[in-house]
View 1: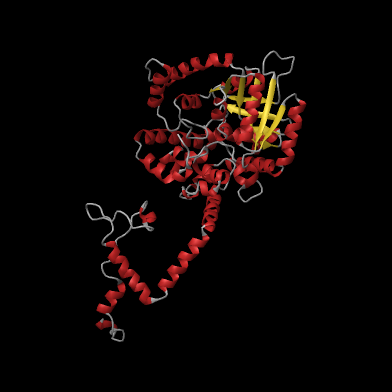
View 2: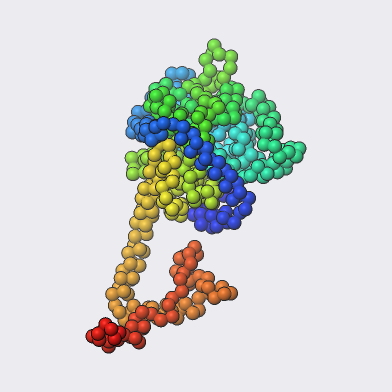
Length: 477
């Protein structure tokens, strides 16, 4: 599946008529919203906790260069290695260099959005390295040659029945409709891979600068097995994930699971600051942290820097009426939903994702759901402004022509009559409704109805019924 944000309108239209997708979205987003509301409702001072979490993220961004150096210093002191990647190609090259230099052929990977972003799977596969997704949703995505449609729940677009069919087709699973039995079958498939793997990979939900600790939060235990059993652990993390202190983490770890899955705390919270000490029999013997920029520095210091505070909980996706109806694949991006409509144009260039800032009703549900109170609606408006300013020449020329026509009565009236005449020849449906306006106005009717023009203009009606009667008494008119 190729990703193309500029095809959002086409993809969304298809998604709206996809019955299995609509069923999956109704189940998935509905449950997620209800669970989040219940979990957040347990807190006595939700608003205060959100602002405290926001402060933790913004402090991390404010001191980002210094905190990144602190991370590097602490991890190096603990025996780990820190590598820097300016873009996706360099990040993938680091992973490949490690694997090729150590003859690593089989890896197991915990869920990671940044590795999706840099297309790591494709890069390692081209060099004969097998990298197995161990998160259940990501594992199903991988074996079905699909793409994630949600930041936290990558299989949001699939129903239970569809997953059953995938397992039966790809893994020869005996028929069952019980989710617990399907999960147990997948676990059996993966367990041997943990034991055979040469290396393990993970992302990072947070990096705590004061100790150089990378943290991942999971519910399936696959994160611990992927990072603790193989002899080499490679963590790939975006530079924006740094927070200053453990106190900041204590705040964020309370609000992340409540916002993402409606839990008070995830089942597993895994932390690593380097390789296992020689005195410990378990754990990786080598640890590499790859810090990925890939466009983040271009956002840092701009009016959109707040978008880097995102903690990837997915709450804005679940709450968004657009995402609820068209799903994640319609956005044509690794990062879908409201936050994706901000990040994708900034990462990939506004011209390469121009429909996404408009894929919002600006209802504000995303901001209300965001655990760190990111003002997504304002950033979407700003992106629309930027896109408009880039087309300012065409827009100004059009407005000047519009103004000139409306300021000259004869020209205006001629234009109205010409439009009415042209409408007679416009394509229509069987019952006479207008199908589309001619080019270039067809962009309007592609997604909107065009009301029919009046058979008689107001000026013509006035001439026929009121001209010459302006000075008569009101009761005779």
